[in-house]
Image 1 (cartoon, helix red, strand yellow):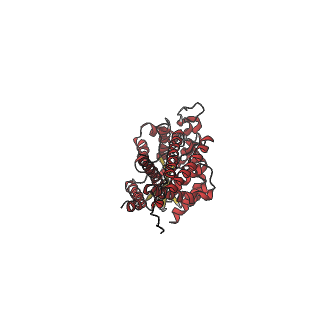
Image 2 (cartoon, chains in turn cyan, brown; image 1 turned 30 degrees about the horizontal axis):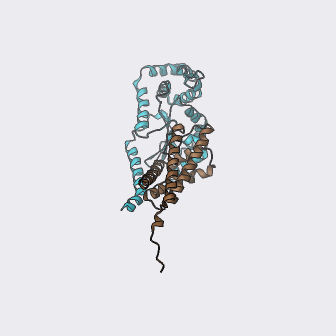
Image 3 (tube, chains in turn cyan, yellow; image 1 turned 60 degrees about the horizontal axis):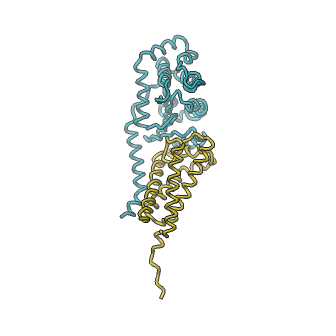
Length: 220
Length: 149
């Protein structure tokens, strides 16, 4: 009897795996607002990226990983990419930065990417990664450098008073915590055939290993 | 008393290996491959095969330890494996790598806590191995010897 139970261990584990994935799929909410998406909307594989604007690894993700990834998978229409916000509590200015990026997206979809890149690029001036260890939190002046004055004015108004901005961030945070159980940032979630693979260690590995895995997912 | 301690130690070790395997197997192989890559010891080509097979080996080892089959040899394998893991972790910590331990799934940074925990597990494995060899505890050796007339 004992032996039989022991032999059933692997089967039980695999059953558990299926249950976890199925429940995650069932809870997945409706797609996010369009400005946070790139690539082919009909692609069989979706990649969601959870980032925090004040996290240095996330800045590295946008600087080092994204250009090649965009070229290989987004521009070729092989995947649908969704950027999701996951501002962490230990980062005092991350939520504000997320509000600026989302407000820019609301003003014009094309502004979203410009502002996201600018916020990450200037992280060392306004965030806790600044030389003083605290940062000014002055995201406004960095964003103002890349947006036309009219658009910047609208962004400021949205950041100040529009509840949609916080709702958009809250929706992503809820998904990170309750659906994908994101352990750290940046984290990628690869969605294929209704299964959500949460990958938080991709920045540790060479790009070609991740590419190998993603190509397997696309070929499935 | 000693026998019961040995049994408890062996079961604890078995459960530890099963839990560690389960945590890795429920995540995609690429997640564990990322953990392995973080240690900067393996060549790129080895990451996928090791990430795919090591958790299954841990599971098999855990099940073998719980069942008590070939106790001396499986406790020895557990000790050697934990010794290897601990050495790699100490080396990575000493050179200042800020990485995940990857021992029980994602999101656990390598640090003094994980090192202390893994050292305790290694100490337990060594104690159970020594105990098993001293008591000659091995299920295969308990078979009745044929009587030669």
